[in-house]
Image 1 (cartoon, one colour):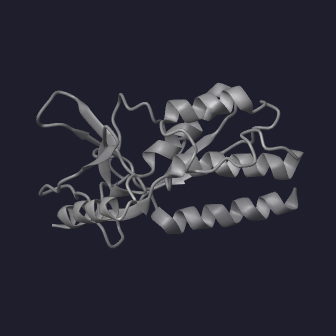
Image 2 (spheres, one colour):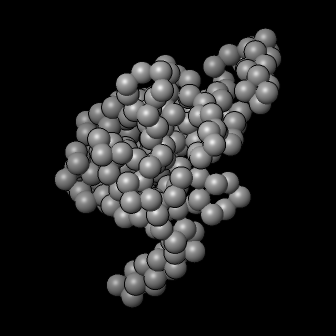
Length: 215
């Protein structure tokens, strides 16, 4: 029902001359089919999609990451390597393209170490074909942080926080094989897992901030 409502909103926007101005963000999802995120339907032992969000085109974390890096480098070194007018609307759409402009336009001396933190990553075996469907609203920008680290030879960090004990029951990090979250062939590799959820992560973050202030 919610999916139908969102599709209707897209059609209304098109009639109001706002074609390509919005998109439907599905969380958690099973990756993308073309430009559309794939709905994850619930099973008896695994939660499905819980959120469908009507969002402005370009409002994606991967593009936002590069906007922040561009602004950081300007604050630190006085230049915009991606251009002063670079924003999430005119940024490339794919991770490969985003990584490419990083390596082409950003000096290794200017690229900072990045720490990415997420809680929504999925990996599900497709029942209709012999392949893994990997998605989750945090997968894209975490993957981009990981790939930027490899490209610039920086030890970027990718953290995953367990959010399975909140309002929504999700696959838990306490599962030794990360069932429903990742798999042995998953290209996204987590640096650290916060099995204790938001409380453990918050405690870690405070200690990190305190240690940094002493430097």
